Image (cartoon, rainbow, N blue to C red; front, side, top):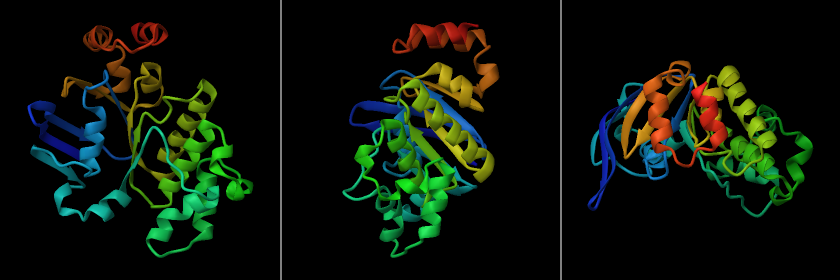
Length: 245
């Protein structure tokens, strides 16, 4: 379980996050929505300890994040960015890279992680740049899974994908939660996606939690829908229609 208690992040004169209090149970997908600049990515960065809070407490499994060694924490709570970066080399070499950093080799684990994201082992010797955007995102997921994370944080992983590729990523993540018992924090601008994949939905606006509840209740709550339509200018008209139903 991840908990945040009155967490704030201030940079200079700008308040990025303001008094965030959340409890995120394990083995669920927690979607985080909000307009650009709401603090969604900053929230993930705090949990991954890429940044430290100005005030407040973050805990994982009842222990303060500050008590975890940073490298060990990032293996347990892994962050996947919107634009995956690949090194020169094959798909297999890229997926195995976290093991290389640990002085390990484990070809069986690499193949297992490929299977978990639905990638055939025949791709091991391919150049990642030859793959489609959706396929590269799944390779990035496999590379992250090699670390053996307990929590997977996704920062708009399907923002640049076509609907079919986005659907493949969604299916992959849902399977990981079901089969590998992962906890997922998923930042998205896509309201329809949040409704499809989330067990809970959190709405951030101006660095504050404006709403947080189980996803079915969120998308049928008039106050939640009013906030979405008032503040999320980037939401497509189709997504607005979906959340109004």
